[in-house]
Image 1 (tube, helix red, strand yellow):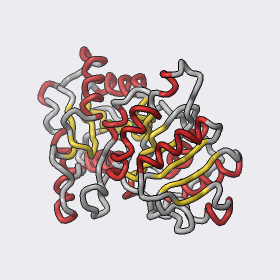
Image 2 (image 1 turned 90 degrees about the vertical axis):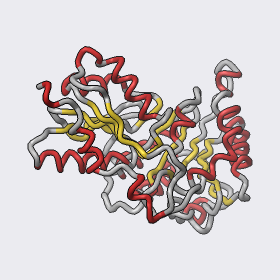
Image 3 (image 1 turned 60 degrees about the horizontal axis):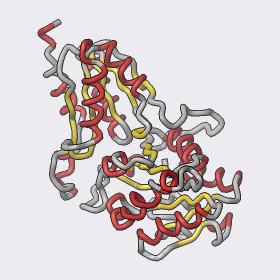
Length: 321
């Protein structure tokens, strides 16, 4: 995935001189995860450069550059490192278009390496999507595949308004090959990764492979589970999600973030409201626990796995069939 993202940045910078990339160690070093590797050498320090360790300054600089005609793509080195920039993102980046009645749009992409599964510690493994999804004015996407990483990042850079781009860290070194000439569905569109007849698993970002793995294990036991990959958290594709759940009558939402007041909670509420007369069982969630991110030796207990997903699927009132 790191290679797909690097190619997307390189192609976007080649196509549009107004695209600039900056952040902590993204210049000559190429970023902690090598996503910006070689961009400074190719495009020069005017278009890909390092910043001080000052996330609020990075976001504020991006806002000013966007107001003056550039398309900044900034990297927050780790998920929780972005919190010092939160005031700039929520109070100014998200609100400028509304504040100016659409006269000032801010085409800024904030790339956030996020979520766990890499043996990291707190501040390095947060799933922070709910903070951004709760803020009107922000588009929030989370790819689960290398093809989507490329296609969604190109779409995010071309977007006229701010996009929070959440990159699952544990997928950075996935070996999936990408055909960059093949179009992917646009921002705002979910896709059915696996059709199923008995229940629907709804996931995004790093939880999609978990859901697919659970579906494979269930198939071996004779249960047919479908998997919907949201891809885009905001805007949310109600049509695709609700159509799949109405077809199966059962749904489980899978996400790494703590479950309380989460994106998973919002999805469960939307499914319950939109599919009430089709449901055979309450909508369930499989999430991280409501605790700070644990030390590396404990993260396997915190992260949703296929076994936890299947245990929850078993509780979907199958005796009613």
